[in-house]
Image (cartoon, rainbow, N blue to C red):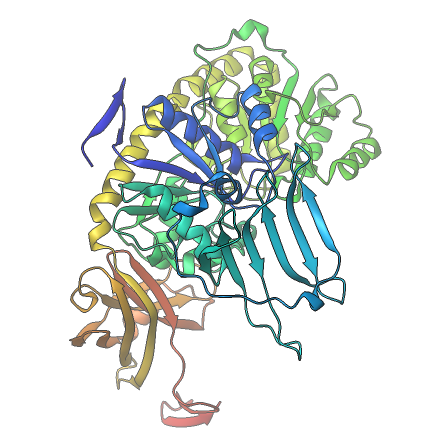
Length: 616
């Protein structure tokens, strides 16, 4: 990298930048909003950032035009789609994996299903097998009618699949490059876009994560932004299951130059559960704020605003219940809810049953709904879990004090209770209602909290967040040559033993195959991890490395009875044992199995303190 581009205080390393989504839906949420916004912010700082997509949409022209007119996509930001890219590219210039003939039996093709582009040209044809449901081949066409890509799954005469073949062809139908997996095709495209230059891929979509993760090029760094809680359903941060969409990311975290958390608290919880590594970062989402504090006189004393999707995660029924309590004491207070979702009818029914038609109003989708915070006395957030709630930041940036459940993650990172808003315990409807009434009744309180909300929102400005991105990208780039690219990382238990004093020990081998990076055996280490089943962070104890060699680390770890029991809750009489492998970007834990392929004899202490064995 040759340097940085500076605009005011914002600086970004001199690289190519791409924001990576799977696609851009017609109605999208906060994740896509932030990806598009970030691309525009990078462009304002002098670094153009294209948005990459992998869906088979025939054209993005109308979508791009609409988003630009709505101010959601910068005029400096280009949306690139892998299929549309090669549809327009000169196939004769593509130099990829050598193609081989892929015969597809015409007899297994049924009538084609045709997709047209906006100009009425054939974009793709799906050829079906005789069963009428299974796709045998899908061809993609240039506007002139020639095929540019064949996606085929040929079968033998007895019906067995020969696998998948994706073949780029030139205007004459001659194969130019071929891949056996779609992911390899997509990765070839991204590598081609990088053109050998320093490049940062910032991935927002968990669907796109597995596509980007395997890229291993010295000129490319990969950063995965975690928009939601890493724990499914916002459960216990130390015991809860990994969120379904993010599980593959966390289980293969070593593949990334950076896992980017939106809040400090989420990263802290993650490190307390899984440990620390060099590829963990915190960067807030940016959120534009009003250039100046909106006039308090323009705020309606009895009006609240909520901007969210009408989905289960947002827990809007609790907001309605809050307003039911408020309505009993302050019948003139109302809540305007902006957003769409699958629960609209259900929520309206709840409003009707509670007789709150004048107190709670569902407005549906409203362009620039965030502007509604400028005339509201309060905002509400009753979500079950979040990564970083954008509506909360929008409320703060417009001087509207929020009343928010103290959930994971986000509210406690931006709200100081009683200073720039109110935090109440999750699901405490009564407490939330009481804070709403206070804000509506007390002009001085509402004015003071609103002013503090706007002042503190400065740390989420584009410029402040670009500084965070600059540091993160700079660090990730500097560390890239030290990143360990490993496959088949595993742990084999060789010995489990107990000490006379009540301690526990294990010995075994950590094994792997190395793709790139410095010699892993000189960097990797291990911890014996004691997990508490009833709650609380696990305890980490260093393991001793007894042997090092290419692809192998021999380790031994031992803990005393006091160490095992340290900080364990009284009601927790069961603990789980893990072996954690760590070093640079590597952070992976393995559940330690009890020796033996089946039922095993396990030692235990009798009532008289004698050693006995039990078959388990």
